[in-house]
Length: 197
Ligand SMILES: C[S@@+](CC[C@H](N)C(=O)[O-])C[C@H]1O[C@@H](n2cnc3c(N)ncnc32)[C@H](O)[C@@H]1O
Image 1: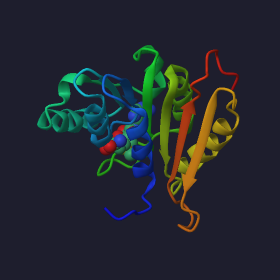
Image 2 (image 1 turned 30 degrees about the vertical axis):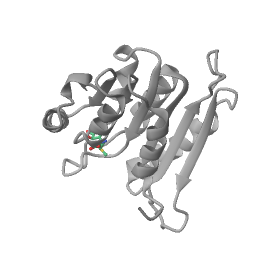
Image 3 (image 1 turned 120 degrees about the vertical axis):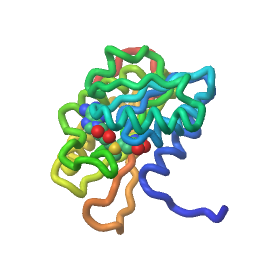
Image 4 (image 1 turned 135 degrees about the horizontal axis):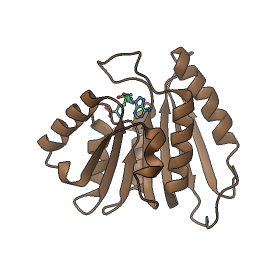
C-alpha cells in the first residue's frame, strides 16, 4: 500500500499495533459504536481482555452487536459507567488505554466527553499502565467542550514527569482551526515508582 499520512485515530491505531500484544489487558475508555473495542479485542486475542466504557446504553448495544458479529464478545467486558470510575473496575498492569473523545457518531451531540471527567480518567489510566504501556487520546477541539479538553490535556500532559512518561503530540499543522489531535503517552520501561505529576 502507498504510504499516506493518516488522521488522528489511525495514528493512535499505529501506536496501539506496536504496544498491544496477544494476552494483554487493555481499556477502551470511550466505546461509542465499538470500532476501537473490536480493534483492541482482535489485538489481544482470545487470551487477552478488553474493558470498555461508555455512559450510553445505546453504545453498549451497538458494541455488543459488533463484537458478536465478529465472534469477539467473549474477551470483552462492557461497562455502562463513566471512564472517570475506571480505577475501580480495571486491574493494574494494562498494556493500553484508548480515548476517542467527543460524542457518539450518529448520536446526541450534547452527550459528549467532559473536561473534568476526561482528566480524571486519563490520570487513572496512566496509573494503571504497565511499564512500556501506552495511553492514546484523540481530541477534537472543533467544538467548545472539545477546545477545553484540549487545553486541559496540553497542560496535564506537559506536566508529567519525563522520568516516568514520554508524551507525543501529533496534529496536521496546516489543517486549520479545530483539527483533531493525537496524543500518545508511554510509561517508560524503566519506570518503577509512583510518578510525580
Ligand atoms: C467519539 S465517541 C467514541 C467512538 C468509539 N471509540 C468508536 O470506535 O466507535 C465518544 C464516546 O464517548 C462516550 N462518553 C462520553 N462521556 C463519557 C464518559 N464520561 N465515560 C465514558 N464514555 C463517555 C460517548 O457516549 C461516546 O459514545
